[in-house]
Amino acid sequence: MELTLNINGRDHRLSLDPRTTLLDALRDHLGLTGSKKGCDQGQCGACTVHVDGRRILACLTLAAAVQGRPVATVEGLAHGDKLHPMQAAFVEHDAFQCGYCTPGQLMSAVACVHEGHAHDRAAIREHMSGNLCRCGAYPKIVDAIEDAAPKMERG
Amino acid sequence: MRPFRYEHAADRAQALQLANGPREATASAHITAPIQYLAGGTTLIDLMKLDVMRPEVLVDINALAGQHGAIRADASGLHLGALARMADAADDLVVRRDYPMIAQSLELAASPQLRNMASLGGNVLQRTRCNYFRDPSWTACNKRHPGSGCAAMDGVNRKLAVLGASDHCIANYPGDFGVALAALGATVDIEGAGGRRVLAFEDLHRLPGDTPHIETNLKPGELITGFTVPAGPWTRRSLYLKIRDRQSYEFALTSAAVALDVEGGVVREARIGLGGLAAKPWRSHEAEAALKGRPLDEAAAHAAADAALAKAAGHGEATFKIELGRRTLVRALLQAHAMEV
Ligand SMILES: Cc1cc2nc3c(=O)[nH]c(=O)nc-3n(C[C@H](O)[C@H](O)[C@H](O)COP(=O)(O)OP(=O)(O)OC[C@H]3O[C@@H](n4cnc5c(N)ncnc54)[C@H](O)[C@@H]3O)c2cc1C
Ligand code: SF4
Ligand code: FES
Ligand code: FES
Image (cartoon, rainbow over all chains, first blue to last red; front, side):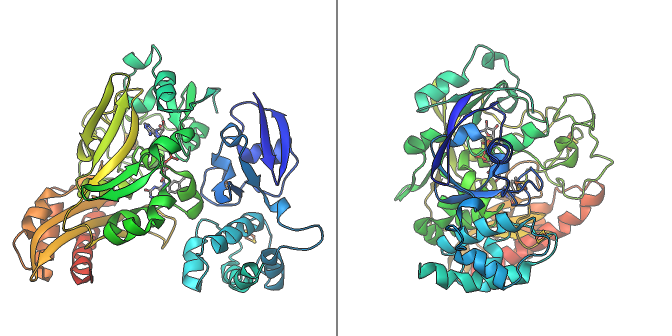
């Protein structure tokens, strides 16, 4: 089927099988390989992106179902060479080892702050529980989010 | 995933028209009809990838959120549109204050991403997490293939049902929100080709009996448009307690949905649901009766828990859940009693 996806502010016309998930459309058809495929079953959060400003899982979302709605991926976080405050905090705090879960962690972390769920460490842990990290970088991920939250609020 | 046709419904009338093809009339169950509604997709797309669900047409109903996505409370109760997202209902300030059990049942479920995607209508229709059901390489599963047997009966069944199971299927209903709806005596609004009807939520799901593949009393093509939770003096003193293998982002081993109307330390009315333990969203009228008119102390809480699990039967590994279920309910009752409302 013919459809238009709006990714990071740009429209893309695509011809896709209706079975194509948003994750496969991003990775295999648009070359946006930042979003990762961990489980492909909604269980790990590696594929987290934003649709209409809310975090969702791209592996359980059909591309057809998000036609015409704004999609934001990890590729759209930085402004040119200037990292998003959350990305800078992840680097600063060593909040990853292998980095496979990181794009999903970043998209989830940004949403967690916007939702108002980053007010303390317990809230951050609970509201980041949808993003698994096989390397166990959890304490440093919480550090990074705690640090980035006020910086994001300042703009 | 098998090929399917994708259709987008602009409104309810179009959704009903698209989902009521000639073959829906003869399909054996709502959930296996060749045309399926697509809401959040977090059950449907998952099970289509696993080749457990095999619809030929998906009717996307997300555009119905304008018609059937509102969350509204009035003197008669709480009205929840079927296309409202789990996150919206969990974050709603009125729901949190006046129906905390409902808010907690949603907030303690799945993950933030899934709660942003999943609709309330789709939530109540989620399928069991029985491993053999989710993996078609196992041939024996009466729920997937009527008459094929039940691989879980002598297999890995630690998380399965101890209440309401049958010799044909011991799967548990995994959801949380449905347990709260059952406990509070909610109703479900349904639209079909033949018009509108209202069903008690407790009558939406069926016990497995010898037809575990027929999970609900919905007719193929019927659309859930919303739920009403009746108001009552017990809804504010209510909570949902969920016990899991890990602290977050996990299905319930056991859970208890408890609402109490207490006057001078004595229970006037109780509303009690159990999750994780049963074949369908479970309301325990027995536990409610055991509490009525009694002062709520530890002895009363234990009596209610004994009544709730009196008919429980464990299959192999799941037997531990009977005692865990009792303790979950005791703790939930004492916590609800201690709440300041
Ligand atoms: C990793 C993971 C963890 C989870 N953890 C939990 C948990 O802890 N607790 C919990 O309760 N749930 C949990 N869930 C389940 C989740 O809550 C459900 O998958 C979700 O609520 C289903 O809603 P949906 O809108 O995505 O439904 P869909 O997948 O879109 O639909 C499910 C079914 O319902 C039908 N349907 C949908 N809407 C309607 C309607 N309005 N009328 C008629 N039929 C309709 C569809 O045709 C389909 O057959 C988890 C899911 C995942 C993937
Ligand atoms: S318990 Fe039910 S769902 Fe699981 S294998 Fe047996 S019949 Fe299938
Ligand atoms: S790849 Fe989507 S949740 Fe794991
Ligand atoms: S950094 Fe390796 S999985 Fe998280």
